Length: 221
Image (cartoon, rainbow, N blue to C red; front, side):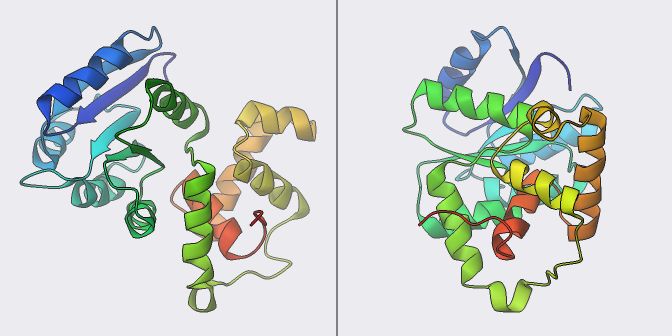
């Protein structure tokens, strides 16, 4: 990833979108590379250029093609792009659905500017960012479906892979994991790639879901 975080904003409310753009553009490490008013404009742009962003901040309720459907398409066609869901809704079912379709973070429209900046920087650094509220929803949602999804056995992952996975769940960066386990960042990346392959997860967020689903990573009630 570049030192500058390249971002696309997608929201049909122009004034709101321009406000976010103004806020983010003040940051020296953030660049807005494109803005769209619906998912159709966004997908058309991504398919027409090779200069893809690091992150898309995606409104969910939009005309023509909404954010949920656009996220599904992007997750399939451009899986390297991180999607932060932006919405007025914070119901548990809404959050769970966005995580399921591929969003790596979730911001409510009444969040503070600092909360948005924190989310962008954390996603750029670690690949995902979930608040305690969202983590609780993931946990609850998966507990309700574990019987049909769980496939973990004690020998499936190595001891080191389990250590890396748990630190990922604590939202540690690659460098932080490397320092804590006294291994190189490259070795951490290797373990992370193995985890993605073994668990059939598409991204870091999927690893967190897997860990909660299989009770590898307990979260406090």
